[in-house]
Image 1 (tube, rainbow, N blue to C red):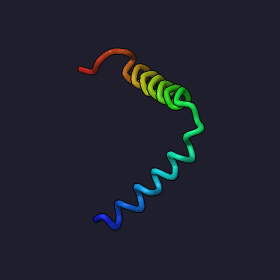
Image 2 (cartoon, one colour):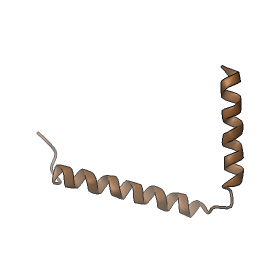
Image 3 (cartoon, one colour):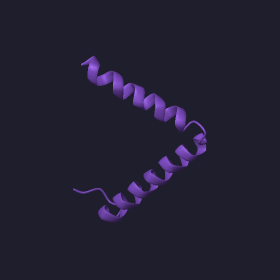
Image 4 (tube, helix red, strand yellow):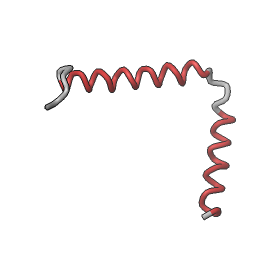
Length: 52
């Protein structure tokens, strides 16, 4: 199990170091946009009312 997990952890750490120059505001903004899109799809598909 460790032989599978360790290379993945190393790859994640390398990606984190490479992306460390990106502002945390971009991550928060991206998460907010995704949340609003999902909320809009939910309201449009459900017409704003819970299904009974």
